[in-house]
Image (tube, rainbow, N blue to C red):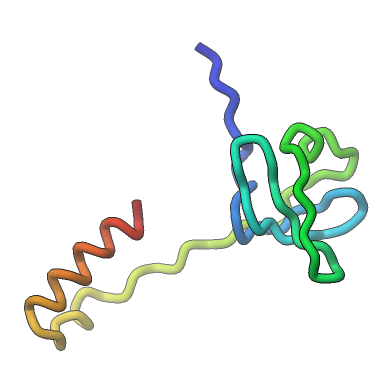
Length: 93
């Protein structure tokens, strides 16, 4: 089965060139990408139209920041550490 997949880099926080402007990606669904306009408004573009744009390019993709060292958690009570580690797994998912 050949599943259609979104190209790497089209994600919230990325910057793309489309229709002569560099815009920030503010939302992504299976069929549309919402781009921030230079005037602060947003425009939803069909994914297919975005990818077929003559000047389309992914300019910048956000880099996930590393998690703080676990030793920083050691200063908190055990119950707080356990809850933080529980949330960490869900956030990373």
